[in-house]
Length: 237
Image (cartoon, rainbow, N blue to C red):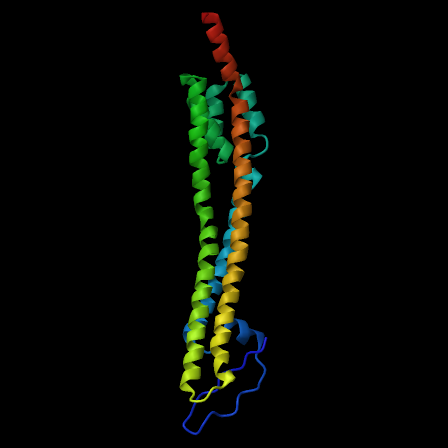
Protein backbone atom coordinates (compact mmCIF):
# COMPACT_ATOMS: atom_id res chain seq x y z
CA UNK A 1 0.00 0.00 0.00
CA UNK A 2 1.55 3.24 -1.14
CA UNK A 3 0.10 6.43 0.37
CA UNK A 4 1.92 9.77 0.31
CA UNK A 5 0.97 12.88 2.20
CA UNK A 6 -0.44 15.55 -0.08
CA UNK A 7 1.86 18.57 -0.29
CA UNK A 8 0.26 21.99 0.46
CA UNK A 9 -0.01 24.41 -2.41
CA UNK A 10 1.74 27.78 -2.03
CA UNK A 11 2.15 30.73 -4.31
CA UNK A 12 5.73 29.69 -5.15
CA UNK A 13 4.70 26.19 -6.29
CA UNK A 14 4.45 22.91 -4.43
CA UNK A 15 7.29 22.15 -2.01
CA UNK A 16 9.06 18.79 -2.20
CA UNK A 17 6.89 15.89 -1.06
CA UNK A 18 7.52 14.44 2.39
CA UNK A 19 9.14 11.09 1.78
CA UNK A 20 9.23 10.00 5.45
CA UNK A 21 7.67 6.55 5.89
CA UNK A 22 4.06 6.38 7.10
CA UNK A 23 3.57 4.43 10.31
CA UNK A 24 0.82 1.85 10.71
CA UNK A 25 -0.90 4.09 13.23
CA UNK A 26 -0.97 6.99 10.79
CA UNK A 27 -2.10 4.68 8.01
CA UNK A 28 -5.05 3.06 9.78
CA UNK A 29 -6.03 5.46 12.57
CA UNK A 30 -5.41 8.95 11.25
CA UNK A 31 -6.34 11.06 8.24
CA UNK A 32 -5.11 14.33 6.76
CA UNK A 33 -8.65 15.63 7.17
CA UNK A 34 -10.21 16.07 10.66
CA UNK A 35 -13.62 14.88 9.47
CA UNK A 36 -12.05 11.77 7.93
CA UNK A 37 -10.29 11.07 11.23
CA UNK A 38 -13.63 11.42 13.04
CA UNK A 39 -15.21 8.82 10.74
CA UNK A 40 -12.32 6.42 11.32
CA UNK A 41 -12.56 6.73 15.10
CA UNK A 42 -16.34 6.39 15.01
CA UNK A 43 -15.89 3.05 13.25
CA UNK A 44 -13.24 2.07 15.80
CA UNK A 45 -15.66 2.76 18.65
CA UNK A 46 -18.29 0.69 16.85
CA UNK A 47 -15.73 -2.12 16.49
CA UNK A 48 -15.05 -2.18 20.25
CA UNK A 49 -18.79 -2.06 20.98
CA UNK A 50 -19.28 -4.93 18.55
CA UNK A 51 -16.74 -7.11 20.36
CA UNK A 52 -18.29 -6.37 23.75
CA UNK A 53 -21.79 -7.16 22.50
CA UNK A 54 -20.70 -10.42 20.89
CA UNK A 55 -19.15 -11.61 24.16
CA UNK A 56 -22.18 -10.51 26.20
CA UNK A 57 -24.79 -12.12 23.92
CA UNK A 58 -22.76 -15.33 23.63
CA UNK A 59 -22.76 -15.60 27.42
CA UNK A 60 -26.47 -14.84 27.69
CA UNK A 61 -27.46 -17.53 25.17
CA UNK A 62 -25.51 -20.41 26.67
CA UNK A 63 -27.24 -23.71 27.43
CA UNK A 64 -26.83 -23.08 31.15
CA UNK A 65 -28.84 -19.87 30.79
CA UNK A 66 -31.65 -21.34 28.69
CA UNK A 67 -31.87 -25.04 29.61
CA UNK A 68 -29.94 -25.54 32.86
CA UNK A 69 -29.01 -29.05 33.80
CA UNK A 70 -31.07 -30.66 36.55
CA UNK A 71 -34.11 -28.43 36.08
CA UNK A 72 -36.24 -31.00 34.28
CA UNK A 73 -35.37 -33.74 36.74
CA UNK A 74 -36.22 -31.56 39.74
CA UNK A 75 -39.58 -30.40 38.38
CA UNK A 76 -40.46 -33.90 37.18
CA UNK A 77 -39.84 -35.33 40.65
CA UNK A 78 -41.99 -32.63 42.25
CA UNK A 79 -44.84 -33.37 39.87
CA UNK A 80 -44.58 -37.11 40.56
CA UNK A 81 -44.78 -36.36 44.27
CA UNK A 82 -47.81 -34.13 43.58
CA UNK A 83 -46.02 -31.09 44.97
CA UNK A 84 -47.59 -28.86 42.36
CA UNK A 85 -47.32 -25.56 44.24
CA UNK A 86 -43.67 -26.19 44.98
CA UNK A 87 -43.03 -27.06 41.32
CA UNK A 88 -44.68 -23.84 40.17
CA UNK A 89 -42.62 -21.75 42.59
CA UNK A 90 -39.42 -23.55 41.63
CA UNK A 91 -40.03 -22.93 37.93
CA UNK A 92 -41.04 -19.31 38.53
CA UNK A 93 -37.91 -18.59 40.54
CA UNK A 94 -35.68 -20.07 37.85
CA UNK A 95 -34.44 -17.29 35.53
CA UNK A 96 -33.88 -19.58 32.55
CA UNK A 97 -35.98 -19.79 29.39
CA UNK A 98 -37.28 -23.26 30.23
CA UNK A 99 -38.16 -22.06 33.75
CA UNK A 100 -40.33 -19.22 32.47
CA UNK A 101 -42.12 -21.44 29.97
CA UNK A 102 -42.69 -24.23 32.48
CA UNK A 103 -44.04 -21.81 35.08
CA UNK A 104 -46.51 -20.41 32.54
CA UNK A 105 -47.69 -23.93 31.66
CA UNK A 106 -48.10 -25.06 35.27
CA UNK A 107 -50.11 -21.94 36.09
CA UNK A 108 -52.69 -23.16 33.56
CA UNK A 109 -52.89 -26.70 34.99
CA UNK A 110 -56.31 -26.02 36.44
CA UNK A 111 -57.69 -25.14 32.99
CA UNK A 112 -56.72 -28.41 31.36
CA UNK A 113 -53.95 -29.77 29.16
CA UNK A 114 -54.95 -27.74 26.09
CA UNK A 115 -54.61 -24.51 28.08
CA UNK A 116 -51.16 -25.63 29.23
CA UNK A 117 -50.08 -26.22 25.64
CA UNK A 118 -51.29 -22.77 24.62
CA UNK A 119 -49.42 -21.27 27.55
CA UNK A 120 -46.21 -22.99 26.42
CA UNK A 121 -46.56 -21.61 22.91
CA UNK A 122 -47.40 -18.07 24.02
CA UNK A 123 -44.73 -17.90 26.73
CA UNK A 124 -42.14 -19.43 24.40
CA UNK A 125 -42.83 -16.85 21.69
CA UNK A 126 -42.74 -13.98 24.19
CA UNK A 127 -39.51 -15.11 25.83
CA UNK A 128 -37.80 -15.81 22.50
CA UNK A 129 -38.76 -12.34 21.22
CA UNK A 130 -37.51 -10.74 24.44
CA UNK A 131 -34.14 -12.45 24.12
CA UNK A 132 -33.80 -11.85 20.39
CA UNK A 133 -34.58 -8.12 20.53
CA UNK A 134 -31.20 -7.06 22.03
CA UNK A 135 -29.31 -9.38 19.66
CA UNK A 136 -30.68 -7.37 16.74
CA UNK A 137 -28.10 -4.74 17.74
CA UNK A 138 -25.44 -6.87 16.05
CA UNK A 139 -27.51 -6.97 12.88
CA UNK A 140 -27.88 -3.17 12.98
CA UNK A 141 -24.13 -2.69 13.47
CA UNK A 142 -23.38 -5.09 10.65
CA UNK A 143 -25.60 -3.19 8.23
CA UNK A 144 -24.81 0.39 9.26
CA UNK A 145 -21.02 0.18 9.51
CA UNK A 146 -20.43 -0.47 5.77
CA UNK A 147 -22.67 2.50 5.01
CA UNK A 148 -20.54 4.70 7.29
CA UNK A 149 -17.42 3.33 5.62
CA UNK A 150 -18.91 4.08 2.21
CA UNK A 151 -19.75 7.59 3.36
CA UNK A 152 -16.09 8.06 4.35
CA UNK A 153 -15.03 6.66 0.98
CA UNK A 154 -17.15 9.14 -0.95
CA UNK A 155 -16.01 11.99 1.29
CA UNK A 156 -12.34 11.05 0.86
CA UNK A 157 -12.62 10.93 -2.92
CA UNK A 158 -14.36 14.32 -2.99
CA UNK A 159 -11.55 15.83 -0.89
CA UNK A 160 -8.92 14.22 -3.12
CA UNK A 161 -10.34 15.58 -6.36
CA UNK A 162 -10.92 19.02 -4.87
CA UNK A 163 -7.25 19.19 -3.91
CA UNK A 164 -6.26 18.06 -7.39
CA UNK A 165 -8.50 20.66 -8.98
CA UNK A 166 -7.10 23.49 -6.87
CA UNK A 167 -3.49 22.50 -7.47
CA UNK A 168 -3.32 24.13 -10.89
CA UNK A 169 -1.38 21.27 -12.41
CA UNK A 170 -2.11 17.56 -11.95
CA UNK A 171 0.02 15.93 -9.27
CA UNK A 172 -0.79 12.36 -8.16
CA UNK A 173 0.58 13.08 -4.68
CA UNK A 174 -2.29 15.54 -4.19
CA UNK A 175 -4.70 12.60 -4.20
CA UNK A 176 -2.93 10.65 -1.49
CA UNK A 177 -4.65 12.04 1.60
CA UNK A 178 -8.19 11.74 0.26
CA UNK A 179 -7.68 8.28 -1.21
CA UNK A 180 -6.13 7.13 2.08
CA UNK A 181 -9.21 8.30 3.98
CA UNK A 182 -11.47 6.61 1.45
CA UNK A 183 -9.75 3.23 1.69
CA UNK A 184 -9.25 3.25 5.47
CA UNK A 185 -12.90 4.04 6.23
CA UNK A 186 -13.96 1.23 3.90
CA UNK A 187 -11.53 -1.09 5.68
CA UNK A 188 -12.88 -0.29 9.15
CA UNK A 189 -16.47 -0.51 7.96
CA UNK A 190 -15.83 -4.08 6.84
CA UNK A 191 -13.93 -4.87 10.05
CA UNK A 192 -17.08 -4.01 12.00
CA UNK A 193 -19.63 -5.53 9.62
CA UNK A 194 -18.18 -8.98 8.93
CA UNK A 195 -17.82 -10.16 12.57
CA UNK A 196 -21.10 -8.51 13.57
CA UNK A 197 -23.17 -10.28 10.90
CA UNK A 198 -21.39 -13.59 11.46
CA UNK A 199 -21.91 -13.40 15.23
CA UNK A 200 -25.55 -12.40 14.77
CA UNK A 201 -26.23 -15.45 12.59
CA UNK A 202 -24.42 -17.86 14.92
CA UNK A 203 -25.99 -16.52 18.12
CA UNK A 204 -29.47 -16.44 16.61
CA UNK A 205 -29.18 -20.02 15.31
CA UNK A 206 -27.95 -21.17 18.72
CA UNK A 207 -30.83 -19.35 20.40
CA UNK A 208 -33.38 -20.95 18.06
CA UNK A 209 -31.96 -24.42 18.72
CA UNK A 210 -31.93 -24.02 22.51
CA UNK A 211 -35.42 -22.50 22.70
CA UNK A 212 -36.80 -25.38 20.64
CA UNK A 213 -35.09 -27.83 23.00
CA UNK A 214 -36.56 -25.99 26.00
CA UNK A 215 -40.06 -26.25 24.56
CA UNK A 216 -39.63 -29.99 24.09
CA UNK A 217 -38.43 -30.33 27.68
CA UNK A 218 -41.51 -28.46 28.94
CA UNK A 219 -43.85 -30.60 26.84
CA UNK A 220 -42.29 -33.71 28.36
CA UNK A 221 -42.81 -32.30 31.86
CA UNK A 222 -46.53 -31.73 31.38
CA UNK A 223 -47.24 -35.13 29.80
CA UNK A 224 -48.63 -36.52 33.09
CA UNK A 225 -51.36 -33.89 32.93
CA UNK A 226 -52.34 -35.14 29.48
CA UNK A 227 -52.54 -38.70 30.70
CA UNK A 228 -54.62 -37.57 33.67
CA UNK A 229 -57.00 -35.70 31.36
CA UNK A 230 -57.38 -38.76 29.11
CA UNK A 231 -58.06 -41.00 32.12
CA UNK A 232 -60.69 -38.57 33.40
CA UNK A 233 -62.40 -38.54 30.02
CA UNK A 234 -62.33 -42.34 29.95
CA UNK A 235 -63.86 -42.58 33.41
CA UNK A 236 -66.62 -40.17 32.47
CA UNK A 237 -67.31 -42.18 29.31
